[in-house]
Image (cartoon, rainbow, N blue to C red; front, side, top):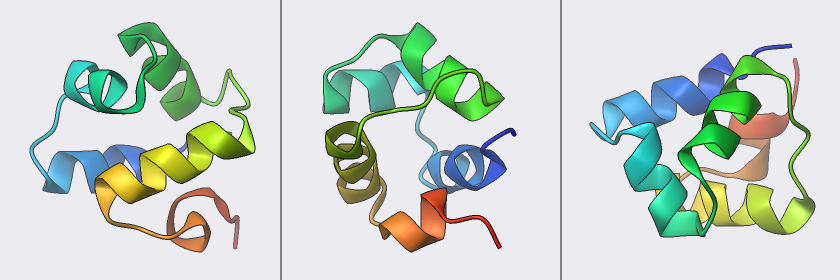
Length: 64
């Protein structure tokens, strides 16, 4: 399942995949795969992404 919430939060901050990747210490391809729903990130990576985007785990990774 695509992670449109993560993509949206990143877009609101006018942050590219590359910028987010650099901030959390992964490749741009990893961010792209998470957004495409093709990669299941570790909890540590999820937390780093949320902190960088100013969101909670529920905001970005919890499915409603």
